Image (cartoon, helix red, strand yellow):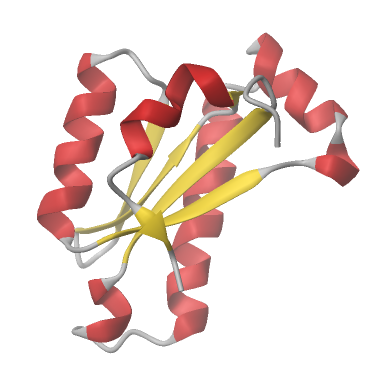
Length: 120
């Protein structure tokens, strides 16, 4: 994948599965909620429109945050750097579960995600 490829980063809490024993389907739904929400919130953005226009060749990178603390710290960093994202907070439990970033060029945002590994 080229550095200027439009990509959407998704970061999911790994401890939802490993420690809190959430079913895989419930965890995947968190990522789906966050992705849908961030696309909706940034629908008129030109990169979002370009990303959606390449419907059959979309690129997503799914990463793992170790726990709630690492996820919320990432959200704070992204907010401070004006990187549009959605921190999904599952209700009614009020549990932060996932971050989805609006589509960006890979070279613009990759540096924020280097400390995270691919979700396995």
